[in-house]
Length: 411
Image (cartoon, rainbow, N blue to C red; front, side, top):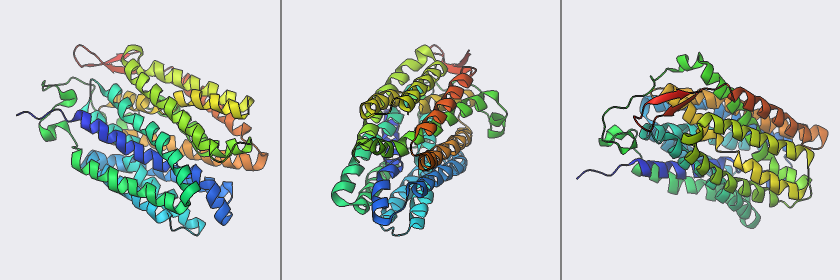
């Protein structure tokens, strides 16, 4: 009896993995206030620890990419998810600021590098070619649901049981739920279970030639996609890590930031599903330009209209343009360069993304400390998004023909 196509289960597991990985890694902002209250660690120091997380994550993206290309996604994703869980449990023991830097800034980041978007995108791309954009969008919705579920949960745990219990519960979610599911379900390639991408019975797919990392680094398309992606990194983490504190600046309660990030995550999940459905009709490049412009408008709104009710508007508009950018960029790079060295190529692109993410987190805290507000940081984000939208216009789009599964180029 022929085994049913494993692809849908792979997408489900990547969804749950991304839900846990992003949910944990993006909770750092929720711990700023209790750590400040307990130990007096100021915003600049805590922001620097998060920046270290961003840089470490970025530096280890190419490393994890090479490991994935060599050993396959399964062992890398499972081991990395376990490391995240252990790092969070260790974080429950912190009493000195250097421990927060080690457990969250380094260990959590290394784990996240191997079980975050890059690794799971490579896995899904091995199982789908014709439906790659749609399935990447579906699996990537885990990033949104992770924020929607785990950020408010973290706030509730901190408020009711303390920050140490919150670290333990979040770590156990990775160790008890996510890691066993990866080990039980995931296979590195369809051929490992005598299947073909997309569940097709045909033995041949005509695709673009797979490129090496060195070839990608010499490509105009790689650098256009990656530099646009850098503007995403700066603004994504500027908002995620500093919106809770900004909402307090405007007179909101400590729980408002988590609520706003939850609203953004819900809107992002809807947008993620829509972009997956529309990518074959409008093209990934056109959707990507549109999302950069929407996020640009959200940042301008935030810079010129500070107020509590304006934050709710921002959360909706920003959310629509937040996480959906990631599967679109991933899909464009996968379509262009193929799967053989996809881990290494995506890993380098994510490294650039994370350098700018670290800058966004640190400059947000630094500019807030020296100016007293976040206005200059928001305008800086708007400028970078303008650059990202303009440069992405010159990107070529590669799509899989619905007739013959051949990758074709569109302008």
